[in-house]
Each structure stands twice: as structure tokens, then as C-alpha cells.
Length: 302
Ligand SMILES: *[C@@H]1O[C@H](CO)[C@@H](O)[C@H](O)[C@H]1NC(C)=O
Ligand SMILES: *[C@@H]1O[C@H](CO)[C@@H](O)[C@H](O)[C@H]1NC(C)=O
Ligand SMILES: *[C@@H]1O[C@H](CO)[C@@H](O)[C@H](O)[C@H]1NC(C)=O
Ligand SMILES: *[C@@H]1O[C@H](CO)[C@@H](O)[C@H](O)[C@H]1NC(C)=O
Ligand SMILES: *[C@@H]1O[C@H](CO)[C@@H](O)[C@H](O)[C@H]1NC(C)=O
Ligand SMILES: [Zn+2]
Image 1 (cartoon, protein in one colour):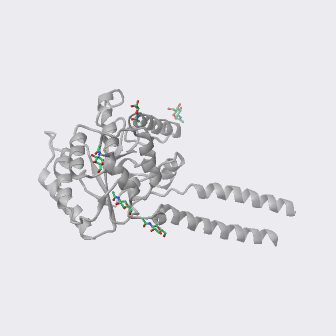
Image 2: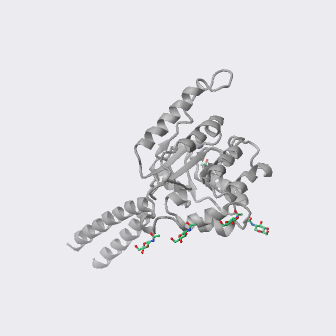
Image 3: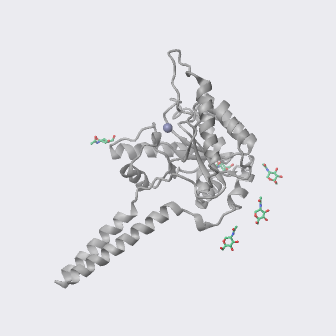
């Protein structure tokens, strides 16, 4: 009898250990204080290069959540267009996955194949495989999040939406009331600024002309908190491993990687904040797990 109970206990322990490994936690915000992580989804596209000029002039590093097959239909074959990721890496930006074709297949095999396809393409141009991902439209429930986590991605949302996507096109293909769209975006961003948050994880899209030509320049010009630091998503989460991943894989010294490298190592913060989001959840689930286990053990004994 004792033996059987002991075996039950081991089985329970094994099952529970598997359960706590997968949590399905989307990351909604940065953890490092005084940081701003600008993120751009859905590219690359014809405006991305101009955006990088703007960012470079302002000394800003950002994160691009990219697709392999979205706005540029020939990107998978077109090596010249793929160079945009070589440049992005040289200039200290982070490339992250936004899925292959802006879609999450229900079929797990297809999902994994698609994610791998994008990672292969990115790796060929950056020297590293994306370890961060964002779901198309940010639509991903807990079960879906677990699918990303099982493949080793951190799933990233945002806490500051630029609303650059919130527009309609007329029959002529032009954006209706473009001025209103831009005004709304400025208002939304300004409102978040006024909250004086500790850090910002900003959602934008480099595939829109109005984002690149109007919203981003306005954002840079009006940034009222000069003591905030513009960093990549990995950095705003205190992920030092990611910085070393880029360094070891990129031997190009001709660009302003210089600044990037020192910045990454000279963060104002310690490791104490690292992964605070996921660790918190993990710790609480471990506690629940131990309590359950103890209760069950006592039950078995009597
Ligand atoms: C899932 O996708 C794979 C690869 O595309 C395919 O071979 C398989 O038949 C699909 N499974 C189902 C259940 O549709
Ligand atoms: C590193 O440098 C070598 C030699 O110049 C080059 O062949 C290789 O492609 C470079 N690697 C990356 C990731 O840039
Ligand atoms: C790297 O930084 C040093 C010192 O600040 C500077 O002199 C040098 O020009 C920089 N190199 C490049 C490629 O930016
Ligand atoms: C990095 O930090 C060290 C130690 O605090 C400091 O001496 C150095 O000037 C910093 N470098 C930069 C580029 O901020
Ligand atoms: C990091 O934390 C340690 C221990 O708390 C402290 O001694 C050190 O000065 C901190 N470094 C920075 C850069 O804040
Ligand atoms: Zn998207």
C-alpha cells in the first residue's frame, strides 16, 4: 500500500513539474526603468529604410517584429531587400518574429514549420535566430501563448498603442481623413506620456507612410522625457544574454555598433529586475504546486 502511494506521489510530481514549465505569460511591459522600446510590426517594406535613417539620426535603437511574407511578397527570394535586416543589425536594432505570413496556423506542424522558415531567413541576414515574438494583431490567448513559449519565444505585447493602424481607406486607395488619423495618434501618445510611466513599450508599424513620415518624427521631437533611454525590447526587459548573442554573431565594426555595445553593458540597472514578470508568476505557481503536493501527501498518509 505504501509503495503504491509513493508511486502516485512520484507520478504527481512528474506531471506537475511538466505543468509549471509552461505558463502562457504574455509580456505586456518593459521592466527596466526609464526605458522606451519602440516596436515596429509587419515590415519590412518600402518605408523601413527611411525609418532607419530617422532613428539613426536620433540615436535610437528599436525592435522590428517582422514577417517573411507580408507587404513585400518577394522578400523570401530577394536578397537585396533582405539586406534591410543586415543594416538593422549593424545599427543596433533587434529583429523579432511576427510569424511568417502574419498568421498563426491551428495546425501545429504548419505553425512550427512557418516559425522556423522565418527564423531561418532572419538568421541568414542577422546571424541570430529571433527569440522574441509578437502575435499578429496581438491576438493570442493563453493556450496560443504556450505554443510560442514551447518553441522558446518570449511573447511580447505593448502598453502604449500609437493607433497608427486605426484608419480607413477610401475607394481611391487613399487614407480617409489622414490629418485626423495623425492627430488621434499624437493625442494617444501624449496621453500616455502624461501618465509618466516608468517605461514604455510602444506599438507602431513601419509599413505605413504616415507612421514613418509623421508619427515617428513627431514622437522624437516631442519626447518630453529626455532622460529616458530608447532601447530594444530585449534591453528594456534586462535581457543581457540577447545583447551578447548579437555581439558574437556580428563582426561588423564599421557601423555605430560601438555605441550599442557599450550601452548594452552599461545599463543603469542590475539583474535584480530581470524577468520580474515571468518570475513572479512562476514563483506563485510553484508555491501553489507545493501546497497542493503537501495536501495530497497528507491525504495519502491517512
Ligand atoms: C498539418 O500540416 C502538415 C504540414 O503542412 C500536413 O502534412 C498535415 O496533414 C496537417 N494536418 C492536419 C490535421 O491538417
Ligand atoms: C564576419 O566576417 C567574415 C569575414 O569578413 C565574413 O565572412 C562573415 O560573413 C562575417 N559574419 C557576419 C555575421 O557578419
Ligand atoms: C567608436 O567609438 C570611438 C570612441 O567614441 C570613436 O572614436 C569611433 O569613431 C567609433 N567608431 C565608429 C565606427 O563609430
Ligand atoms: C560605463 O560605466 C562605467 C562605470 O560606471 C563608466 O566609467 C563609463 O564611463 C561608462 N561608459 C559609458 C559609455 O557610459
Ligand atoms: C548592482 O548591484 C550590486 C549589488 O547590489 C551593486 O554593488 C552594484 O553597484 C550594482 N551595479 C549597478 C551598475 O547598479
Ligand atoms: Zn501585425
